[in-house]
Image 1 (cartoon, rainbow, N blue to C red):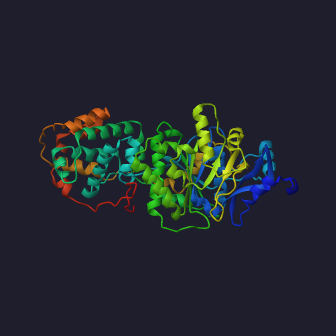
Image 2: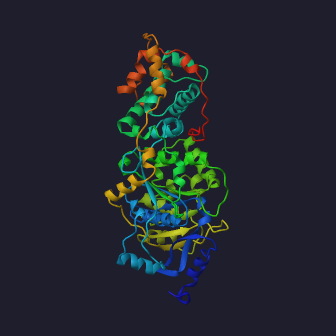
Image 3: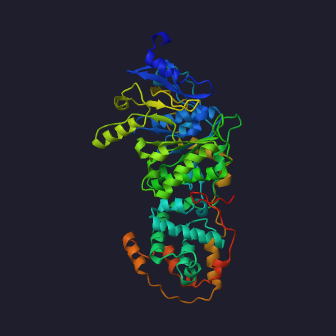
Length: 521
């Protein structure tokens, strides 16, 4: 469509997206159901470290938007991290399939469409899936993130932090869940209680709650996520030999029934990047763009300390050259302090079928800059593959709000077949490094060896205090725990460990604001 036929309102919007530097092409301005291909909507590459939000109801095209942005970032030499919650992002590694529908969309938005895949690596949490296993040690994961996974309250979170503090000082490495269980077992013995006397205490009731939560977590198979070899997050910053950024895809369908775990694990990846990367300020292009899918799971039920840590990480990681896009259904899923830091917005359609939907729609409209659009009407009438966009300009100012018909991804819009995916994983140089789990000597083995050398002696069962009893009643949990965890907690040889176990001090581990380990691996 020639510019002479473009309405003045559309030209005015397009002028706000006429950037001079490198940019990603999202699509064409949409007005009254018509797309104007000479009015392009774009995101400057240099502002992608100012973070963003991709939101919209289920089935409105959020995943394809992620794919569209990811493949353009890769082409510009920027590595990308994508969480594949539904199992349909693996197609980013393969060229797309030409079709009449794709050709029609390309003509509507002024896109020169050619099939192209991206260099990609595929990962899975703890090896639950086809991808390369991603693991973290318990000590690196830290007490704050682990408390979120275990759904502990603030009192229990504080007690778990004390356990980590003791293990750090005592040189008891917490690599996997059995290490953590063994340390808790020792600290609830009379000897362990004496070691904690000067820094606080760990009640039997609180220990029981934590151990019970660990038992549930391990019974769900999550124990495989904790251990060695620990994943080096620097792997996410790689580029291919041709200069394109590698797209790292974390498969998550196998852990969909453990949403709290995978959302918190994604936060561990970000926290580790934050503490390891140097300050670089504003760059011409980001070092990495991280897409945080199902973001509402991260914030739901989070403690005040956890939310403060997320807010600070999002605020400060920008200067490390990392951009974060939160992906969820409505902006209200993201706390206001975090939402205020998301400069780039791609809002797909919302539905208003219920009073709650209507409130969410009104709240979403209020988060956009002033616009000539009736956003309440536009947001409920957008089709699949259409969105309302506003981003930061090269000068850092918000661009005009633009209803946009988005471009079609050039990579495959769907999963690659299992055989092709497995071949890609087998060919990766990272597979040999991370595939096989390692079980080194750590807290469990050290405490077991000391217990074997000690003279077995029965120890009296400590009477819980009134406060501990009340806490146990509130938590709805018993002090004991079944299976291996319970036997370790009540084992008399563990309970009779010498006080010297706590006095054998190692170098205390420095921890970040998330409580993650800062000791270089």
